Image (cartoon, rainbow, N blue to C red; front, side, top):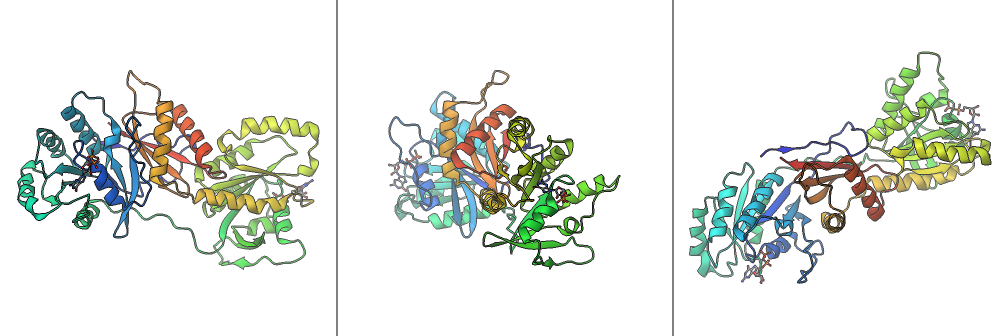
Length: 453
Ligand code: GDP
Ligand code: GDP
């Protein structure tokens, strides 16, 4: 059973950067009462609040962020998966099967004070087929007297049994060393570029880009520094807004008013794309006095595909009367469905109206772009959501969402681990609910689905 990273983006038209798992996943399996939860808590070092089990309450401990020796990984407690298979042995074996196909490594826990049971054997039989690393923890070794029983667990065929006492912490450091050694390296996360945050100011010709830039920098003062302007590099401007310095990228063209002769629209759009790509947050200027045009939608598509944070500035608001405003609202409802998450600011580059609202909107958008929801919090929310509204049945099968992690930021990217295909409508539903709960105003959110085949 191979794994597919299919389904791509939920609703943002693809994107140049495939989401990657920035954190490897460790799944913990074993029969009930061997001490899995205790061991998970031990691994977490209680870094995330773990909800105590209350009898009769669905257990929502599913996945958490852990860290050891500077390595971050996600720990999944498969006890929360509740497989539908009948009988304990089949159920635990099914969990092991899922774990094996879902995680980057599997930790199987056995109670050394009991020894290998038939259920443990069944689990081991499944895991011996695993293509990913499997580690064996012999738990409840509270003192040395049990060490000879531990040695007998070699018979499970899963390699060296690591003797631990989850309850007392005995040798859990050695086990964690072995775990991080078995896990694949996490790809490095894209870091914020040092220095001022990078802003792209984009929009169709004559929408007011250079007017706005002039307004922001002050028309009289030539405060704008040309930064790193080599002959090939586009020239950026440092602009102070609201007590913070921002780097407006590729403003040379705007300043020089290199305006379009025929045939240059193609080059203008390339330049727009380049500016967006070198930015972290984009101000998309729209002309509020005119109907939304194809050109506006093309610019918006570029922004959405780039995964950058975004602020929508409706310019020329000084020309907007009551009638136009009603008309505009209808146009925006239709035209901006893919960027409903972006804040809208009504401005006039000519009069200066509300341009000071741009800086707070940029800050909000970037904070969202940088935001990470801890795995525990994410899954506590998700398991409730899915219990209330399960994914629609497809081909007679009910896909299960096992757990989720926020794999990355810039843009925030969720990965849902499932047993089946999730329809686009359901992923949009998850995104909407995710935003209701966690915010993320001003930033796109990507939702990828990893389906076990
Ligand atoms: P799970 O069902 O596999 O998640 O098991 P739990 O973590 O809920 O533990 C089951 C029982 O075993 C609890 O009463 C724990 O306190 C106990 N337990 C867990 N680890 C150890 C250990 O290392 N030594 C001893 N003596 N008891 C343990
Ligand atoms: P760019 O091509 O996007 O850089 O647009 P410009 O800044 O050159 O502006 C194009 C035209 O729109 C100029 O005549 C500006 O004076 C005018 N303009 C820009 N912003 C506003 C605004 O807020 N209100 C009004 N009424 N006119 C504006």
